[in-house]
Length: 507
Image (cartoon, rainbow, N blue to C red):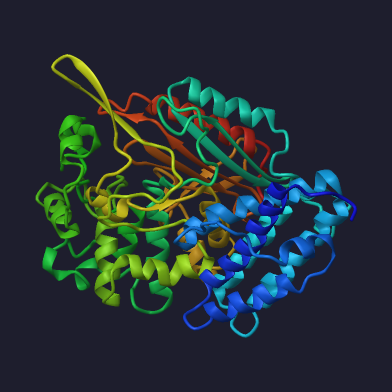
């Protein structure tokens, strides 16, 4: 033996390695899960050497997560910790641990390696390599996840100083992957927000929804320039409104969460977050998507279809109903079939009406005034049907990175539809479910950000997917959106730090 491992060290290694086999089993299709677990377990118990002898025995008393998402949140960081532990003592043993786990992962996939299992194997490999040294192991030379990025640490700390409760950031670029956090997960606590925690991603949902619609276009079930009224005749929509106009916010329909008249007067809609205490008292109410659409259509149109641009959540509720009408299945099922399962996005869900958020997570807050007193309450749990497919999804910074990279990399859409998606209209630079934003160096990024009642998420990628930024924020929301300016300033700082050198014409 080249090193001595304490009982706690051995438990850490066993938890990580056997957890990796459990992850592969959980990701397996029906009928293959037991086989994956059996084959992977045999591989672990057959390993030799110091690490092999440690892993020959399954961990005792360890309770793994009940869902794939919970399991991934538990096991992937444990794999990275195990590699770090071994590298500090003997790089050769770290290499042996990595090889042993990957042999077990490969054994798990024998016979039936579907897309979800393939993506899980990729995540397990990435977790092992996150702590790998550039030399001395069989792993590729990947910078450590904890590499020093003081300029990013500074920006996210400034965000906390400006009033945010907590921030977590994930950057993937030519230097590898960097993750960092600042602030706390909840008021009064001391723990940092979980780097791979779940967050309500707000309007990032629109990019997911638009992708599903375009996938159905690719399948021939939807026509991009077909009148929406052909699919949803019960609403009596203007026949000039096409599917493209919904995805690009050029339909002119009223925004059911509130909109502005041409003279600047705010016209309220349902009791959304700008409604203050009324939204707080109403936050567990269930809205049907048809109800939201009919409320919007009871208001005058903002402009003639196709003649202007105005951001409206109504467009994406109509897109949801369109998906459900042509497929005959709930939007969450189609989201799972077309995106979540193929990409192995175990930390991403579309709750529609469910009030809970999977652990781990940072807490979201809302503050309001009543009788001259300010109240701040925890609104992490609420019914997101008030925003529907305009902003109801939950994800993680890791899954957002995987999603946007796959999207711009052409793994989800045919090239011609991806080009349509990333072609912006002139007024706001909005494509079909994404913004196309210029960088300081003259290049572009594909992006969408979103805020959702005390939670927010950022998602940026270069067109080739070589550089991404994803982030999760928790903060006290309020009717005045008092942190709006700080949010915009902070995201601009982050954007400039990460993408400031992107040049026009970069492949």
